Figure 1 (tube, one colour):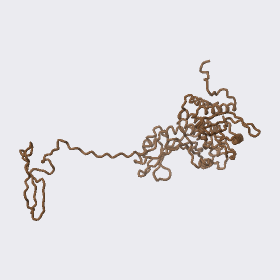
Figure 2 (cartoon, helix red, strand yellow):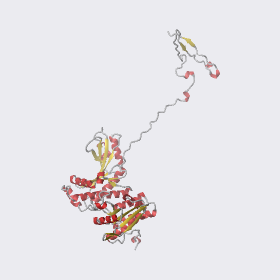
Figure 3 (spheres, one colour):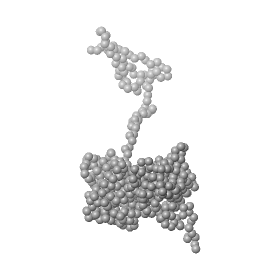
Figure 4 (tube, one colour):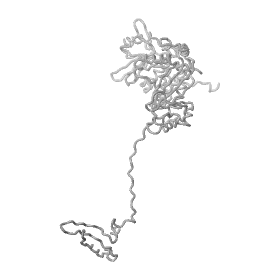
Length: 491
């Protein structure tokens, strides 16, 4: 047998996994062990839950007595710092297994009796809104104990961000975190990707296409929730590649009341046959908006960018076109004029590159904003694979960001420059003279100074100069003759 058939020894092996129970036990032990070993990774997961910044203690299958029942939560995490202690129970599901409300409520009761702080659930279920738990439990049990949820996609994304971008101080700990990443990325680990639009997908899609979907249909809210979960999953995947936190863009009302977001999506599907969402990417010119048109089988991504506040309209269009060097010719550009209502002008990028004036409806009106959009075919299949809805959304977002959004920069005004004082020309030294004949207003035989004295019966006097005699010009110590003052009548 050749060496190519040998299996490399791994810290967390994927071989020997038999059944869902073994899969969950191994995933739980691997994750909790790495959280306690790699301090930066454990801290980034537990800090948002209120845990102190102390070392983590982690355990698996800790037994507790609840009434006459003996229960074994999958894990326990404890953080201590000084006099402060924080403890949470952990429940883990892998593969397609879903969390059970009855089991979670029992663990919440245990946590309340033991004076623990929280219960953490980990599964492949992705909630539509951050902070929203995918399983509904009795709210009365949440008065003293918090309930948190991590999806395996989120855990994997945080691990990659910590190792590849934020960094781990110790090299051995970085290698350990890399082994966890390798394990979670393996198909046999049970940490699956988002690969299903739910049981109601086909029914809802057909109802939208035929125009028979109504707000009261029970199938529509499930599809709306899966669509938002898909956007969260794509955001996590894109964040792993960019090394930054990419999150879905939701309003404050939608974050406070997730039902409002679901209602808006259902109404949009009923009225227009579309579902729309947006993701926020750090330092991008704007939110990346995704619109899935179920009737036209088209997914469109667009981003809005403010136009420069100076220059002619043509100059502003050229400013945008220069940045779209990697954009396909089929991209669409829309221009919106200042104080104009309704839709603006629109044209394909290949036309705008040759003739920027096609976007200018009125040269006298200033352009205030542009919209760059790109459309791609939308898949209809429920799961993954060629022609699936999930992969068409993923491919559209990644292509639009890579070809367009990452090249766009917001316009900034040029700072004012200091005005330079004009330089006065200097008179050549060869033309400068101190002789009396070179002074302004002094000419040979003309009076140099006129003194007019006005008095009682006294005539004015004029001071006249005598042409200098070269022999008596005062050169070489010769005396200079006194000026001749003669009385002159004013009449």
